[in-house]
Image (tube, rainbow, N blue to C red):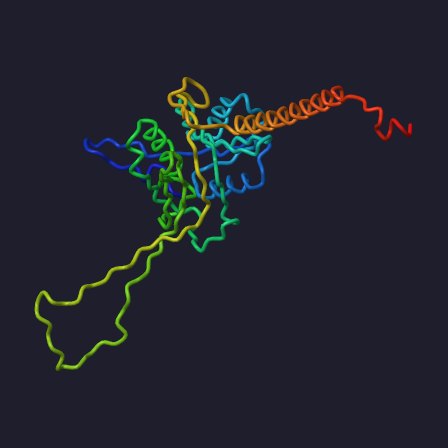
Length: 302
């Protein structure tokens, strides 16, 4: 039997039915994405059973078109991977379609599942536990980031491809002003059982309050992957447009870093050429200042 979408609606006080929590994510990328970035996108879409994939976006200057794609795919969230071919950078857009807000991240230290080869594993399509660092509650822009990431990575129970299991944890932590993403498997080790049981009648009865403690299952975590670091760049009021709500003043784009390196090389080249010109002028002055000696060997035997 097919599961009805309205079966999981909860009844609140007053007899009214609450609207179910429905979130769908559109995962899309731009042209020029590299192999590692494409594998990272595939890993993230595999962790989101409520996501939908779409073809690559041709234009990088008309990002509001993604809102129309979300409307056609019946999605209210978007993850857009923007690749910069010149410097090999990857920018990740996380947006609420169609009204916003939208956040632009710079992706650093991206490692895919195939690259890491961790021992952890989880069921494909299972729902994760999304955990955020306590530091997300310290700043207003971090609260906005936390809310948007929750809507994207928290898999709803009503997702069609979601399985009723919770066996992994998605962790978002903050360090050095960056957001670190990790994916862990939940390992449930059963408690040890006694090998033999005594059945003799002469067994002494233990006094009350001095019995052995019953050990429960031991929980541990094992990393699965992928892992990457997000640097918040800007937060916009709308979806891929609108006023700027937050801007990271400490963020330095790769173009500025490359321009600084180029200027340093140009300064070094100019100083070297200047030293060569000074040396040439100095040699010319020395040659002109010399006095001809009539007894010089090349003058005598000329």
